[in-house]
Every structure is written in C-alpha cells, then in structure tokens.
Length: 109
Image (cartoon, rainbow, N blue to C red):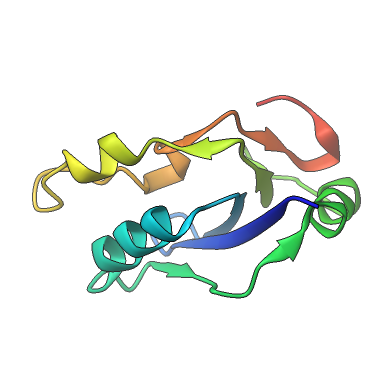
C-alpha cells in the first residue's frame, strides 16, 4: 500500500488553500521540513495517508477555483528544493516542486 504525506499551501494573497499529497521517503521529508521551517504559508503533515483515502478526497473534491483544492502527486523534485535560494524563489508556490500532479475529480492538471 502506497502512503502519501499531505503538504498544505495557504495562499493568503488569493484567499486559497491547496493540498498536495506526495509519497515521500525519510530524506525527502527532512529536506522539506527544513525548507519550510520558517515559511508560515506551508505545512507538512507527518501522518501518512493510504492511497485509497487520497483518491477518495480527489473524487469528492468540489473545485471551483483555477487549481484543485486536493492534488495527488507522483513525486517531489528534491533537487529543485535543494537548489533554490528561498530568499529569491519559492519552489513550493502552487506546487512547482511536485511532479505528476492530478487534481480533483481525477482530472489531469
């Protein structure tokens, strides 16, 4: 059974919140946790969810915005995170570092 971690982005400027579900290994978890430590717009849950639960959330998601509220991702671009100076760029903004994103109701994004 594949497990996913929930990464939440709260975009106050647009009044939107986005959830990304990504399978992560221990190294990826640590790199992401350290990178967002002082970025209050982002939160990484350390409780893993089974893939079936993530799929159910996507199917039930009622999306009216330009981007889905719930997004399932294949993997993280860890090199993008490691190579981005967070004072100059933000690899997490609108899910830029998440690869293979599928949004609500299972539609490819």
